[in-house]
Picture (cartoon, rainbow, N blue to C red):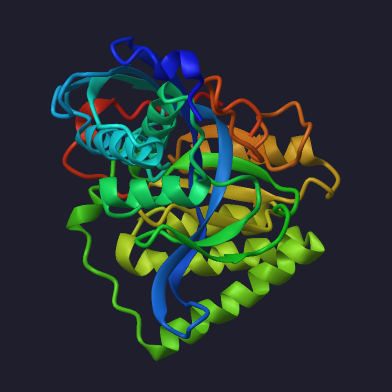
Length: 351
């Protein structure tokens, strides 16, 4: 609830801040069955920290809801998210919605399948909620994010790996507590050029496909439960191979070949972009040597290496297990590219 002092000053501007991390594409994506046996699109993302979106929102009580300014002005999805979040927060507090000023910044490359749009949207929703001195539950954030951009990634959730219905904003299954330990040598296919996912052919999955995805779901659940990095790698590679039927990356065979030669447990590729990764088991001896070998092999095949990170907690390399939302109300605790994607150059994070 909003403190009494703030409720009694309807004309006082209120400031809020929000942050959201990105992800590194998908481990698994396809069509799955929900608890009722209905088909729905779902995905399991590979989270990472480092790049992210930040939003600052100044709520201006007493102004009309349409008096909402957004900077930069091309963030149309973020603007929709702000208006929806204001409406939601005001409704919960029994107040009329109002206008405000939104500022967004971030360093997530656009069009690579790292969830730049969803990161913007979630940071905005958190900033608006923070201006109301509220913290919306993840389910409410997911619902607003889907309304703002039609589909979203599960960046509003915690470290638990989940099978997430991106077009419905709901969790189909919590697969376990955390992913198995992995070291990911990231790279960008297609020279890092953004992928216009709206131009890709629609994916139609028949009964055979759904059965195959369900088998991969069972294997991934087992990999998470047992901490089996090798099994997770096989699932990610199988999912990437299925995605290749649509994405048709010319470097795919080279990437798989590098993984096999240098002892990686598998590969993962964003199903709505060009970011990819070689997955290594950190328990296998000679990790540093294998990471360097992967980087050299990628460069020799003309595939730019980007960032090496890990799913291990408390590791010197950037952890992937949690977000760090900012703002007083958030301490503690991809969407395919569209018409507003030219907002940032697709700069790749440095290795």
